[in-house]
Length: 122
Ligand code: HEC
Image 1 (cartoon, protein in one colour):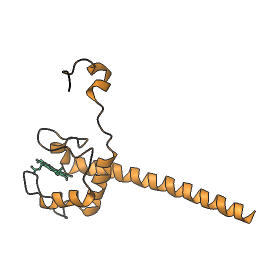
Image 2 (spheres, protein in one colour):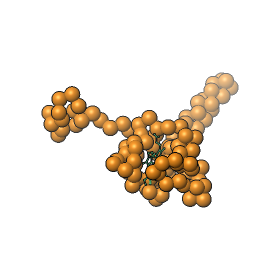
Image 3 (tube, helix red, strand yellow):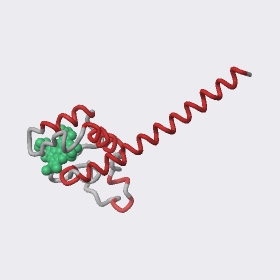
Image 4 (cartoon, helix red, strand yellow):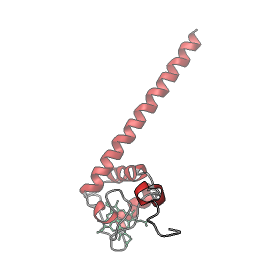
């Protein structure tokens, strides 16, 4: 009986932690999206990070947080460099959480209104 009680307590506790950590993730994703907009990443990478004429796609297949942080701090190319005072490491982690949360785009042929409008083989 005691053991049963112990098991239910452990089960309840794990359910509770899983729910709490999913909530933490959602909060990080939300903060990350706001930062992505606030510091202008969206201007060159699109509001969903899928890229546009100005910048590359950052999602799907988001780089690991260290690689992204490194690029942001020491961009060798056309991208502006963001120092720690402008964008903290924690904010970069949130941005990564946001980018990882963006679902992949559907195939053009899976979008009803586009069916048959895309050229053969594309
Ligand atoms: C003024 C346009 C511009 C802005 C603003 C910008 N980027 Fe970029 N970014 C680029 C371009 C262009 C590249 C492609 C590499 C190059 O030419 O330097 C790039 C590359 C990257 C890469 C490397 C991608 C890869 O696969 O190698 C990451 C990561 C990245 N940007 C993240 C960000 C984040 C996060 C922000 C906001 C904090 C941001 N960028 C803001 C233009 C921009």
